[in-house]
Length: 236
Image (cartoon, rainbow, N blue to C red):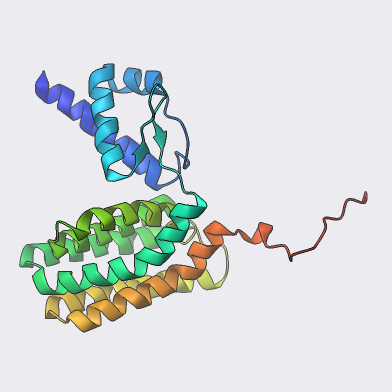
């Protein structure tokens, strides 16, 4: 019975994780605890255990006497994301080049193959999740107990923001996806060679590649109206 309960908790955790990363559950959305309890066959206690774990990882916010909700993406969190992401990604890849094991490098190569397959024939969700797994492995490679929680928190919002990147909306964006894949290959080579400087430079290049699409998430083209411009309210 314990194993069955654990498997149902794991299934709930996987469901929530993928739903949050791919924006099926929007930032700030309240969770329907009654529905989730019924759908996964869990009572309130194990359900809340999963929520507490996921809150600690940054997926959820817990509120007293209110339902859990998906972690928000406010002005403050987005500002912090833009400030911290390049520094943390660079540090992670430097440490990955120092510490990666042979098994971890093989895992990274496997993750890259999944990513390439997703680029060829997967959905935007498949691509975002595959990219997230690639970077997950680099975090595991770093082996730093202080840096890794911050990196994992960044990956949550990077995946959510990255849904814009992995659903191409302009002619240039498919080219950027191909370049992202080439950069992944170069990251693997730098880590395999133990080249910390190259790995750190690739972290910066990789961040800059997706920066425009990340900004599209913050300010979609439909909202890109010049300051002072008034809408045309005249009938057609």
